[in-house]
Length: 173
Image (tube, rainbow, N blue to C red; front, top):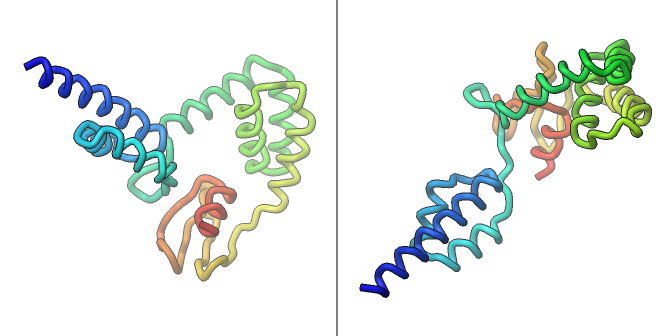
């Protein structure tokens, strides 16, 4: 009886560890929780070996939608309460709306105003290099009116990506 209780406890612990690890790697937490509960060490090792799964943005779902909404809200709030951020955002937006998006992403990643001038320059530079349409690895893509990149032919036609960088990472993988 004691052995059964210990085994069930081990299953629960490894199931929770597997589910948490899977979620952090964009994998199905319920499935991996069950696998890790049934095969504790093997499940964890396989999950670690698989690494993170890239998340694809398509018509029915969004990549980290809640995080993107949170970041957009956070950026808007920062612009309202911080004059330096507002000025930097205005400077980037004067060049291109995409430049401001890139600036927001950079700033929210570092969260350090000492790099603000450099981030503005880099965001403006990168926005000028963004391509509105193109082809890579046999897949053609365009940038739609909402600024998202859509694959129009080739591998995963119809797939959408928030940024040019996400699209390039996906197509080169």
